[in-house]
Length: 113
Image 1 (cartoon, rainbow, N blue to C red):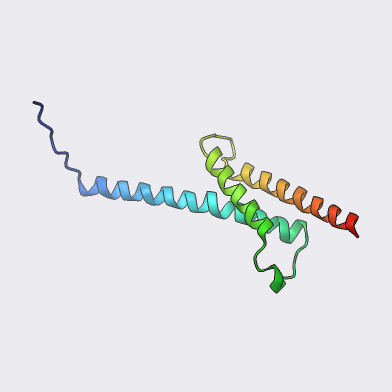
Image 2: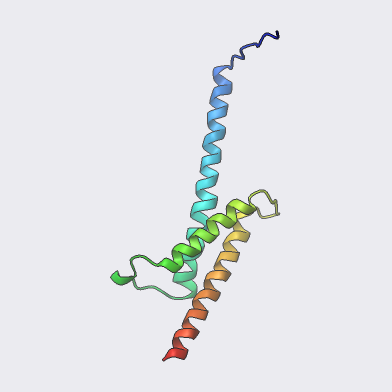
């Protein structure tokens, strides 16, 4: 029977392991969560000029869906390397989808009136 050796890790290697986990968590938070949120907010405020906050719009389902699309797109595409990383392409794609969706909503609403 083979004997198994118990591997002992130094305090330094344990610190490096925790540091690596913290870096991974911070990458997830900034890239996957905050970047799509910023893209949706940027499109709404600057491109579509939604500058008034109305109480009846406290939960904007369209923006929530767009944010989730951005989150999953980031997670799916994170393994691809580009010159600018993956955050910027996901944000630009989300801005385009958000703008097209809202423009289509406006045209549909105008046709009903």
